[in-house]
Length: 266
Image 1: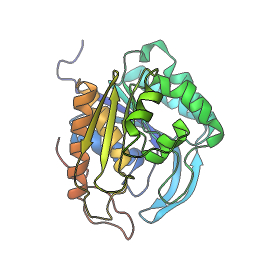
Image 2 (image 1 turned 180 degrees about the vertical axis):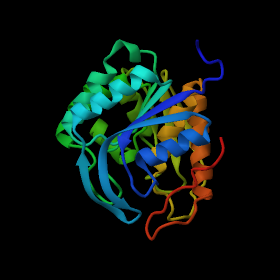
Image 3 (image 1 turned 30 degrees about the horizontal axis):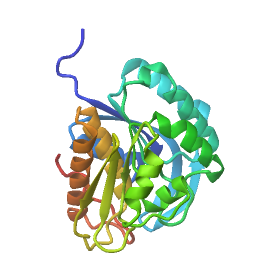
Image 4 (image 1 turned 120 degrees about the vertical axis):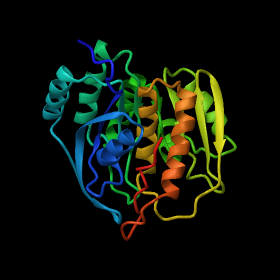
């Protein structure tokens, strides 16, 4: 018998960050803070702390697929968040997974993670065309930052030409694009391309070194909001507000780029 009190469920498929500031560990905290039941299967492991990423190890795709398949025999998600992928074999495993008909109505948020701030590679760039052509079309929303969007489009994006580039790249795509503008100079400006319309969001830059995992938190908050049934524009606006408050309430941990205060209530 279905449980009338069943919580909404989100599944994170991403890398692991032992410091807890990003990756699966952060995703689960974000899901919990939104009142969403979180599940997680790792794509890769890292040797990492707030000072940077020292080593990356992509997990065996066959084992990853077995984990996901057995998990979903028992509990099925209302939304999926995909983060760091690692190598092309894991990319192909994700394509096989999301090509299944049962995921047709499950919103997928893809955080287009290409590398860590420290410079460590979290994606095999030889798979970029396959990533764009085969995986991204399975998404409801993708959340690139500016350097990642530049890799996707092959163009340099500025606040002045962002609308033009989003229209050119996004007009024939089945997914929305939430472009994170933290790399732009001056006050951060984000853009949402959705259903042929462009929205922009601005805010004051928060002066703090504790911004580790902001991209992970935004994508997982967006996935949580979609799991709760919010439409994409509202889910994106609420995810942005959540992350900004989490930055303000950071716990001040670590000797590098410290984590956010992901305990912030929705």
